[in-house]
Length: 510
Image (tube, rainbow, N blue to C red; front, side):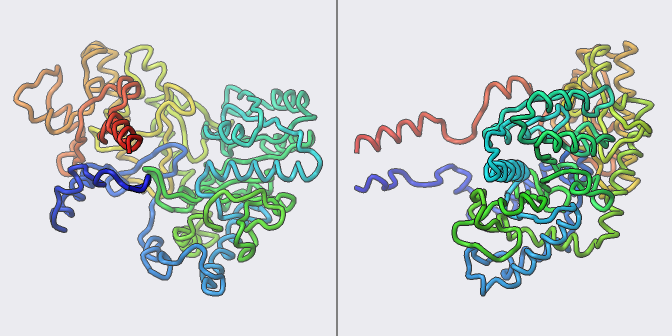
C-alpha cells in the first residue's frame, strides 16, 4: 500500500457518532452553548481585550455568499466589489490613525507587530543600516512585544516606568544614547497597559527618532484613541490595529482576527506583499515588500466587512463618541470602586484611560484572599472576571468598553463592592482565611443543591449573593479547580499519545 494510505478509520472519538439526527446535534450544541458565559449574558471587562458589542447589522454581510464564498485568488476582474471595500477600508483606517498607508494582510495583532517590525528592518536594510538590531521595550508595553521583536532578529532592551505607570524618559534617553549606533526601534503601547495616557509620548517618539530609530506603536488600546488622537500625529512610524477588538470583529477562543498595520510614507514600500497578486489596493506591498505574512493577499478578507460596516454606520462623529464613552465608562467604574479598592495607576488629574487596574496585593497580604479568589467569586455573581495578574501581578484590570450602559456598569460595581464586604468578614474574623465564601468559590448548582452542606456560610450567601440573581442567574458548571495543578499536569480528552506511537510503529512495519 501507499506510504500515505490511512491505516485507521478517521474521527473515531465517540462524540462523532453519538448524534445521529439534526435534532440531537442541535441539542448537543445548545448544551455546550448554555455552559458558555458570553456577552449575551453580561459584560466581559477583560482589560486590554476590548470585549465590545458585535452588532447584528455588522455581522449579517458575512453570511452572504457574495462575501463568504469568494476564493482569495479569484481574478481581480471578478472581485471589483471586494477591491473597492479594501481601498475604502484602508482609507478609513489611514484617516483614523494618521498614517499614509495601511496593509490589511496580517491576521492578528501579534502578526501585525511582526509585520511592522519587519517593515522597519527592511527599510533600514535598504538604507544601509541593516546593522541596527536593538529594540527598546518598556515594561508597560503589551505582552507580545518582546516575542515579536525576537522573531524579527532584534535584541530586546527593557526600560522601566515611574510610580505613576509612565515610561521612565530618563531611562529611555540613556538606553537610546547607549545603543545609538544599533538602535532599530522602540515598541510602545498607547495608552499603556497600565491604563494611562503617556503624557510624554511625543517626547518619547522624538528621542527615538533623534537616535536613528523608528517607533512601533502597539494599537491594542486603540479604543481609547479613535477620533480623539492619531498615532501618526504624535510620532509613531508604524502601528497595528486590532480589528477584532476596536473595530468589532468577534474574537476569543483563538480567532478570528485581523491585525492591519498603518505606516508612514517611508515604510509604505516595505509592507507585506504577495508573490502572485501585485496590485488591487494601495496597502499591498509591491517591489520592496519584505514578503508575505498570510496565505491570502488581504489576509482574513471575508470578515473585513464587519469592521467596514462598523466604520460606515458609525461615521466619524460616532467613532469619536464611542471612544469618549469607553473612557467615561472606565472612569465612572474606577471612581465608584476607589473607596473599596486601590486603583493602581492614574494620570496626574486622577483619571484613567479606557481601562484601570485594581490592586489586590494588600488584601492578599492581610487575608490570603487573592485576585484568583475574587475572579472565581465573580462567577457566583454571574460575571466574567477581568484580566488577572497582568500587567501587574496580584491585580485585576477592568475594561468596560463603550458597549455597556449605566445599569450594567452599576451591576458589576455592586458585585465588586459586595465581594469587598465579604473580604471584610475575613478581615474581621467572621470567617477564617482558609474557609470562606471566596476561597470556596465558585458554587455550582451541584454544590448548592447537595444533601450535605459543609461550609460555615449559608447556601443563599454562596449561590444568591445579590437579590436580582434569583430572577436571572448564570450558574457556573464546575466548582473550584486547582489552578497550579492544572497548569502543571495537562489532561487531554483526545486519545493518548501512546496511540500515535503505536500507529507510527505500524506504519514503519509496513
